[in-house]
Amino acid sequence: MMLQNPTIGFIGGIHENPPISNIDEPVLYSDYIYMIIGTLRAMSYTVNFADLRKIDRTHFARFVKNSDILVVSVTIDNLPFIEKMAIPPEKLVLFQLNSSVDYYLSAFPHFYRSITNFDETKIFDEALSDVIKTIVGTSPHKKQIHRSIPSEFIVPNSTLHLHIGTGCDRKDRFCSLKNSAFSSLCETLDLLKTIERAFHKNCSLIRIKNHLGKSSRPLLLDIANYSLSHGSDSPFFSCHLIPEEYFDDIALFSILRKARFMQVEIDAMHTCPDILDYYGLSSNMSCLKTIIQNLINAGIPSIIINYVIGSPRETEQSLQHLLSDSLELYRISSSSLEFKLHFYYDENRKVLSDKEKGHQAKGFVRHTLIHDTSLSFDHIYAFSYHFYKLIMERPDRKSVV
Image (cartoon, rainbow, N blue to C red; front, side, top):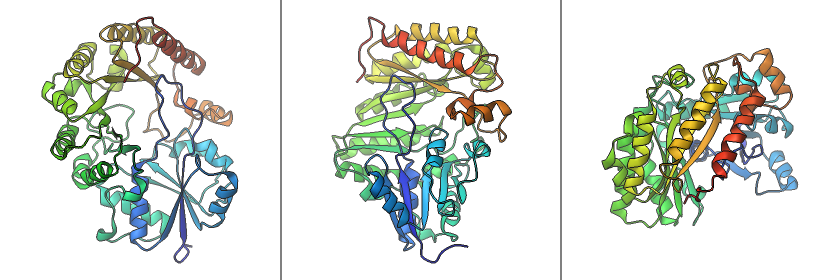
């Protein structure tokens, strides 16, 4: 039974040790959390926010005690850490993007009251209303819904992280966002209002976390043109591009650079044709080489290539194929290129295997992503270290902006 006028606490900053990567990346909260907080406050609820990286245990204990409902943004990485916090189950609501964490919870005791997800396959207002209803038992009116980040959460002279991954029109085999309502969501989210607030607070960098294919081009152009027309000195940090859609879009790259985009992330996923075929992607090395060269020619100073390894079809040969291709790409520009390796998991799966439950019991939440492959987790993990070591210690490597 829901309480009348409960005090709601949102907890951020729960994470495991940084994943192996050659990129220093801070812990990110979902900016949807900020929009949920703004909406709840518009509904006259008392809502507080605690960053676990910035408060001690005494203050955290007081925060938990003074909150009737505690909402925690849960990911595959921080799930066991949330459990160890021993928050009273009747208070705890887990918030996630989509439902990618649901089936991992079967390996844990029932330590929470409910779980809610921001369903990016729906339009924004409907998805946010569903989350609010799970938390407090009632839905907001249309005028109460916040579609931008409240000004109080934009810290002056800091880096602003915008997650605008509003669905996906790329047919990745492992993605759960197929046939999503991303176009409706892009039109609904008032991103420019958030960016304007960031400009006014002199944010040094604005990092755009988008995961769209063709549909992200007009959105990126809107943001770039807004930046150019307002003459802000705040540079944008990064955006994601799909190589098979944008490899020859020289006009877009030029505008992004004029608008002070400092970094572009390319979601290549892999380079081995057999793995790309399994993923259901049409990307290839030719696309990658072309988009990298065109981005360099446009003056984008930093380019990150994202890979996903450890799928059921992964083999030692496919991993070596990836390494060889990456070294070939690296020769295009050692001063601009970086790489990120991500472990494969299928967001559409709903049941843990016995093998995965065993990994969970050992605390290997991230490692349960690797399943039904001829390669062991230890083998794939060791490859990732070897990959980064080889790239990072190349004598011609230069630091990226």
